[in-house]
Length: 331
Image 1 (tube, rainbow, N blue to C red):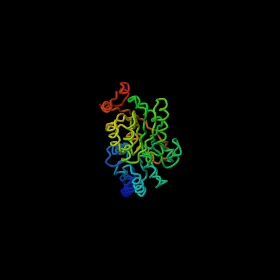
Image 2 (cartoon, rainbow, N blue to C red):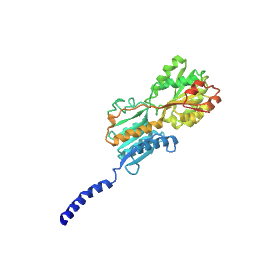
Image 3 (tube, one colour):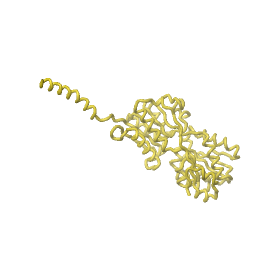
Image 4 (cartoon, rainbow, N blue to C red):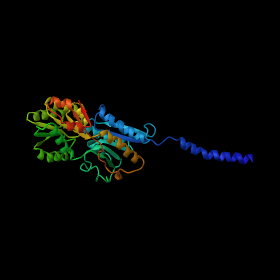
């Protein structure tokens, strides 16, 4: 009897050993690449990456336990984007988070197999990243930012605050906004006809050209600015808002960060929210879903921000109704 009991205990222990070993085995480490188009010391870009990390953590992905991050910062330099894209692909990550259109293009020059989730691509169809929004059909999906009607909305807001404006320059870098600038321009032009405003495309390739273009526009009477949402303009937001103030040009911007630096007003989507949502797509891909089956999504949160101090400096009266519509009024 004792011998049979000893054998039973021995067999039970032997069966239990692999189960215990499996229970204590470390989780599989997954690798996530991140390619940002801005500089590492950009506080807003750091906040977006932090939101992405927090989103993954809430979904059970803990850095050092079951995921590893490899982050590269390309400071709006197309050549740097290409170099860092090559570095990330060489690491063979399970999935890559791409910030904007140029970073996504750089990654796709290096791989056609590794899944990519973009957080802020204006027009992924026109850029050739996906077949269509509802069925991407390849290795790429994510969150689009292009809403063509925004161009008309920016012009309407500018005219509401600065009704004397009769000429509007649409400011952007054709290198970093090549695939989507035309959509915004078309929208601005469509609204310009009824508002009796002349629209001028203003191309800027570097900061030196930025100042000369803005200075040239200021020589003409009743001129205003619309700044397109693209990486070059955001990286150089301090220069853009400073020049607008120096040359007394009323301007509307795509993001609140411009207004916080002294810009007149902004209307655009909450980009931090896009990075949080991108964490959900990365989670689904890590758990076995394919990018081809995950539809490209549009922004859901938009915000209007007005700087009354800047309006006063420009001699403009912000209508009370516009202030009441704003998500934030800076005084």
